[in-house]
Amino acid sequence: MVKNPRRVCLSFFPVRRSYCVCVCVSLSLSPSLSPLAANLARFAIESFPSDRQTDLDWSTDRPPRTPRKTVKSEGPKLVPFFKATCVYFVLWLPTSSPSWFSALIKCLPIFCLGVFLLAHGLSFLGARSGARKILAGLLFSALGDAFLVWQEQGYFIHGLVMFAVTHVLYSSAFGMKPTDGRAGLAVGAASAAGYLLLYPYLRGPFTYLVGAYVALIGFMGWRAAAGLRPARHLWTWTELSACLGAVLFMVSDLLVAVDKFCFPVAHSRAMVMATYYAAQMLIALSAVESRDGRAAPKRA
Image (cartoon, rainbow, N blue to C red):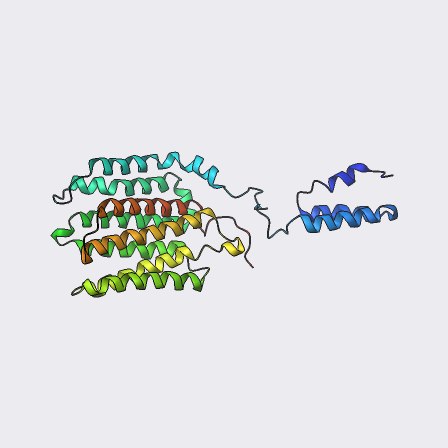
């Protein structure tokens, strides 16, 4: 008969595996309870993950944020972005008559994403370099959007340079680890295929400028995709958001290039802006739990 049942019950409600093992060791001090202690120890070792593999951050005892919780907490902050995007598509100002007002309407959703990051507070941006770089990338994107409003007046290259800087900042925000060579090969092959499609139609300096731009956006896509390692369960929903955002950005820019240099694409403007705004929103969301600021299990 068990003399102290409370000590036995504690073993069935462990907070950590080590606590359960300690209870089992104390039971094993009694010869009559040694078989029970052995069974409890085996149960603890097989049923509870090690400290490095647990889903909790033991320094704070807080579970990682789930997509549902993030939608509830971050969704209201994105309402201005969705409203500004609707305003752009409802007004649908003609591109044949560029103006400062049309530039403002086009850049307004990107400004709202910048406000979305600023709404998390200066301490949030100060603690996460990735979030700061994404905020800077949004500002350069807005400049690029403004230049492209006047692309027919000779400002296309200016917009191209602004977005090239954006991709450098996003690549730096996503980080250089993990490397993931397979993701690099896949994104590199897709980028090369896109450039080979454009190459016969490029003339003059665009032959080199577009090639350099494709290399930069491909590098950004690789760094975003490298964070996804589903086979080892070492990724978060924000890394998935960054990867999807990078892919949509590449699709949007490919549509721009094909429509400008190759042949007219039906409904190109609607598809370009829809994928572009979605890409920027997903990349901005990825900063909410950037790689350099989240509490994550150690990676062996």
